Length: 388
Ligand SMILES: [Zn+2]
Image (cartoon, rainbow, N blue to C red):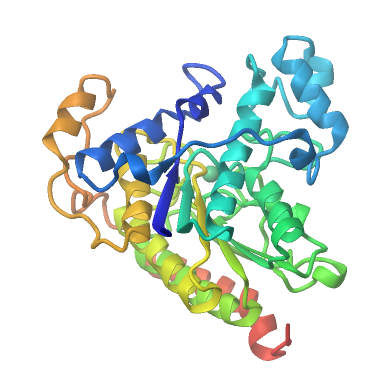
């Protein structure tokens, strides 16, 4: 029988670990899954173990030499000079033991999610271990080695002849995925992110629209630092609806980084749990409208692993299960289990404390600027009504 949703997980996903002090920490998947279990929202039968991606699959996107170097690095055979050419052994993306196997496991998780959906075993699939959107074809970058979304998109094209709409709501620009498909008219990438003026990776301008035959299929919405829920959601909803209507995808792949929250230590956006409640609900709705439901979601950034990510990512699962969004207090058992380990007081309710921060004097100015960014980015499909 076809399931409504599957959750891709095994302990092996936790092997993707740079160090105990690195901000990218896969413990957030364990915290999320445990929260869902304590809510009785997930059961063992919903969980599917990921497989490891084969070399052949990685090479759909990645350059052979890069894969070779990552393999050697994981065995301690690559020095800093060679490593830095390939983006590894850097401060952001240090080398760790079995780096290749751990990275290929995250890719395999997203491929497992793809197969579950495309072979009609599940309507929706969630791989929180994926979302490594900064990985380039020949280079690692920004905590990301192999790019699971890029490989999954090529895999969807090759094995299922599917056109893919990729939606990236991580606070950082989804550069790795965008550049990989910049020339490809059958893949549409949409990224909403904090402007690259002061934030890694610096790209994601409105003017990055694709190249050659792929011109028009890359959309960027760089929003201002301190952007709040209303403005974020208005751009997200308008852009997602208009681009989906224009592109008419076969499948939707969403990258659900959870680092646009006010608490996130690496970014400067002022999102609250409200955006994380709404983001997956619209994705599900539009997947139903355009793709007969086919929706795959992956994780991504999210560096307040205690107060933000478990609640934010749980909302994706609730949307997939078509359950009402949870409200009120988090389960006592979850709070009791993790509070002693958390370096900060946990938030005890599904909603954020209100108010979460002091009012921002530049609120209106930011909203207006963001609205202009949105209109500029959508201008092409609105005015020229380019047929697909
Ligand atoms: Zn990010």
